[in-house]
Length: 86
Image (tube, rainbow, N blue to C red; front, side, top):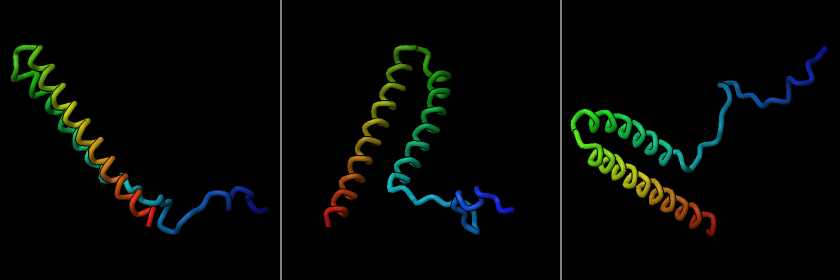
């Protein structure tokens, strides 16, 4: 008897593969930002005594990171849009 589900899942000899996303570089940058933010949290909490200054430093890092990711995504999507129009 043959298994009816054996052909339902596409397989590759090297394993499952997924097409590369054009946003992979942005995902990598987001991961790096998250790691830096994690360590910055502990550094700021041990170095700076004032909670207001701690919140300011972490908020500033968060806002700069957000603007960087938005800038990178908009730039990349613009390039992809230009390529799609050609």
